[in-house]
Length: 474
Image (tube, rainbow, N blue to C red; front, side, top):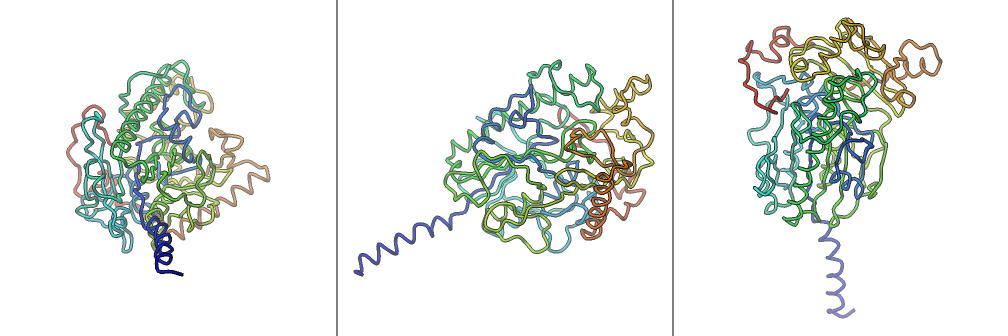
């Protein structure tokens, strides 16, 4: 071989090697308090062309679950890849004044990305042409590093690649303020809520918020295109916890834990094993799995002890058979729920069954009109049996739902004598008990009574925060 031929041969080899070394940007678009209520998930009376288009070109996941049904424990989990119950971050808005830090070996995803050479951003400031700012929400139940992200400016991203960035959207968090679009008379009201004008108006406003969310996602897509970032940026859109409705947020039903996940793969990055454009998958996934998988996109091996699992690429792990969730104190309201579901059944264990579903919660009383409607109609004996369950003075210690036959989870099979139901109950209650032990569930140890009473504060009652329109963050 001549020298010229050898150089050409080496040069040809160098091209794919260089391409392999080029790391993609990773962008998380996070909606607050949002279930899978997009056109591409089959929801009517909502207009979401941007996210529907993203799903059509990317992958859409129908069984993606957060590990908690409220923001701060859920965000503590998916920002670390660990169950909030394992790392002591399970009580909503806890550890705000006691200096609590993450256990040894546990880090934020932004820290791990930084260590791998990534620029990190929690974007709050967008260019003027976008026409809005984002919430910049973190809301973790631990003391974070002094600078968990490098920047909050969108305009820093183009000059600092590869980057890992989060953009958080408040629209579907109450109070809703999207322009009217949905017709209250045409929205689909779940059977466990009263079919009442209050319910329909509230549901329509939630869908209007989703429509506004989609518009703003469209502005982000325009910025990506403007800055030449589309060809090298992996986009992950998901919800931080379930829908902002009475039986959704704060509770461990499908409504509180099932959120959308849409992933878009850029043309300039090699497609990982398992990713198929236009595919819809019902694989069981948890939000902490997105953490581990996003690290793998950046070429970072899954850290030892991380509970999230990689689900795409050469290092993908076997599909989960079960996903888990947990709810503990929210504001001043103390419950302890643990749940597990498989491909067909959801099992819920309630460690506080003596308390009513409508146990006092200042936030829900003030922000959820259907919460108060249920109480009013219950007093008038105007609820159906499915709705009356929410107004009962106590809750079941165990709940089992066949999601194939009962997707709304209104027929509790925990006391069913049918052999298949008894087998499912025994199996899933055993799986849950094992998970509680093996994951070292910190919820087994209650918060001190005074801390719980003062909503997580060790310093007693805190002054009431002023709240503006759309700024209630509980």
